[in-house]
Length: 89
Image 1 (cartoon, rainbow, N blue to C red):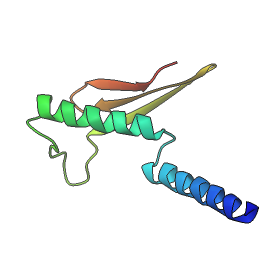
Image 2 (image 1 turned 120 degrees about the vertical axis):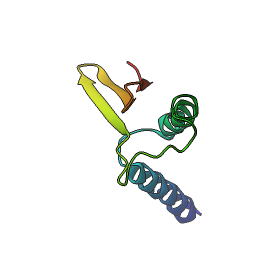
Image 3 (image 1 turned 90 degrees about the vertical axis):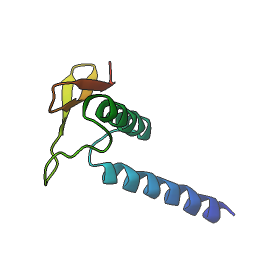
Image 4 (image 1 turned 180 degrees about the horizontal axis):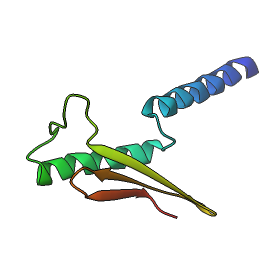
């Protein structure tokens, strides 16, 4: 019974690590969801609808990670200049 529980726990940890890796940045699922919601709202409001065209290779958004002595401040910035801070201190 212990072995089954341990395998289940390790499987969940592996799934979480794969999910984290697939996002490409160290951001939580909640932060990722907030970013996606902001992108949809921003593009609908400012750029004529979601998803908006941003060139052949994309690049419409910059992710900015600012380390401090007490943590990281993280935001996403659109090429139009508008930003969304998804992690505060």
